[in-house]
Image (cartoon, rainbow, N blue to C red; front, side):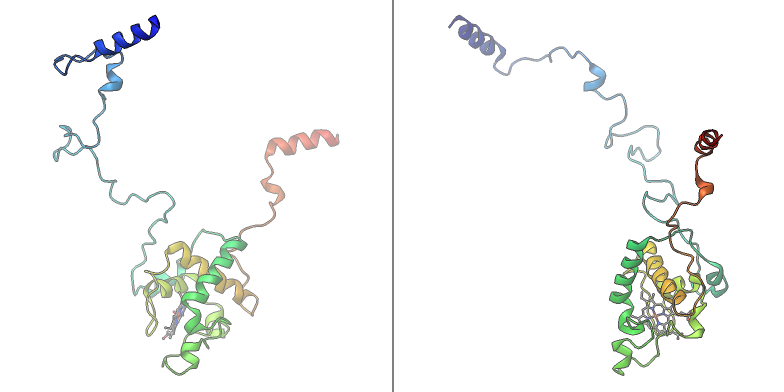
Length: 211
Ligand code: HEC
């Protein structure tokens, strides 16, 4: 009962009727009042006084690709352009899925240039037949450029596929070609770790064990 009374009195005494003019004590002022500039405060260190800065020109967001520096129409550069990306089975499957959505209508899901749009006679220009000798050894960069900029009657797919998706599609085409008379497939991820990758320390330990 007494405890209850004390509590009520102490709570009531906190209510100063909104006439208090001074704030209470702050025990850690640098936590209450940031020493750093807050995002939307004016900043005397920059001519435009904005604290939130734009990223440096040319900055690439995490998870995004570096720019490819290709110039549209520079067919010589297309031929040597390549990627250091390597694709695992899931990514190659994704490449096939995207190919069937965006490219199959013309190039055919058998990659023979006989997609339904062309086969039905509604599209006048013959799409590339990826089984044909003309395309079997086509450099990957040239394929990438076709997907990015388009080629004659074929439109650009840059708006539908980002750079990594374009490469996945091309890796899928290249893998298919390697099984149909094309060059050995080089865009696949190494499956087994070669022995040379073994950490030197492990190799030494194993050496000792055998002695
Ligand atoms: C609307 C039909 C159509 C679609 C859809 C299409 N293409 Fe094509 N594609 C063509 C035609 C037509 C050509 C032949 C262009 C030429 O050489 O005149 C071609 C050529 C190509 C070439 C050869 C480029 C070269 O330099 O000769 C590649 C590679 C290619 N396409 C990839 C793709 C990929 C990848 C997709 C899907 C993202 C795609 N195409 C979607 C019609 C299409």
